[in-house]
Image (cartoon, rainbow over all chains, first blue to last red; front, side, top):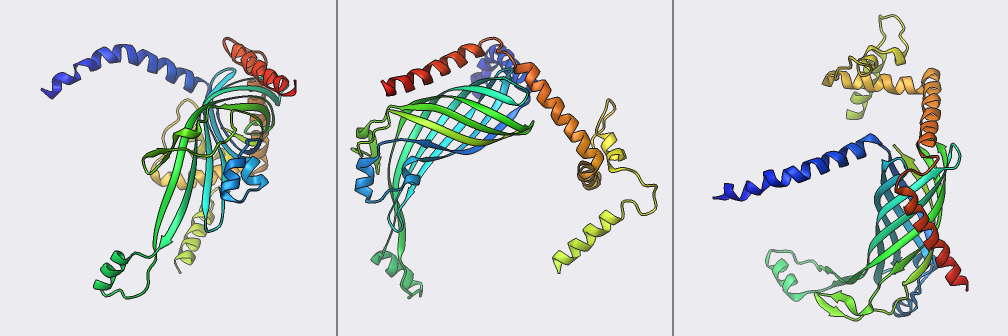
Length: 229
Length: 110
């Protein structure tokens, strides 16, 4: 009977319920949500990729756009999620996007009333995607549409992409100045370490070799505006 | 036409608030008092709009701005009091992060 399969639930609840209770109490005891929007500067070596794409700029190479959301779970500790993006878009050609995602553990203390020093440790799960929108004609589609009486000329769009993902790690130290209790400016210096492997790219389900990128150890500077609630 | 209708309705609601009543400061609105304190009660659906209007009016008034400043200072003082020194395991994380960053930059210099 399907009901027999649910017998494990009371046993599981005996262990799980106190843990959930402790976690909820800790989280709701210090209600402080911090959302940060900002940018960053880093120095990856993307020569192989830029040569292949035939185009690059300071923005596409060295600038990161950042979104971070953290929750204060203890007097000096916040946990949360961070997302850093690097875009490179070539008109009528390839789009490249690096996404650096981090699970953040951040501790901090107040040096003065409105000045906070913070320290961040975060494992990362990063990815890169190179894609292109393709527009061409297809005889089968044209025949099908013309059989319905649509005789105009149509182009057919599709998207192809190669992608890869890898683990990483980031750490930073920073200073935050609170203009108000709900608004602050955040400046950080740190680094990221990436375990990128060029042989683990995927294209259409097949494993392929991608560009040789040097992402293993990169300095990282970040600036952001923090909204606290 | 629809926009005009809603504008007229909105103005009507706003101006109808104190048509024939004694002038009450928005911060002293009975609806705001109802949602605060020990005997707080939930608002009815039809009270939501007048409540929101009172809250916005109160926040924009001089008294509301003073109260917000006091709250802001109190929140900052409380955050400072709670986190002016490290407590528990959090200092370990901080030392770890600081050492890693310092070692990274020293290793890239030398």
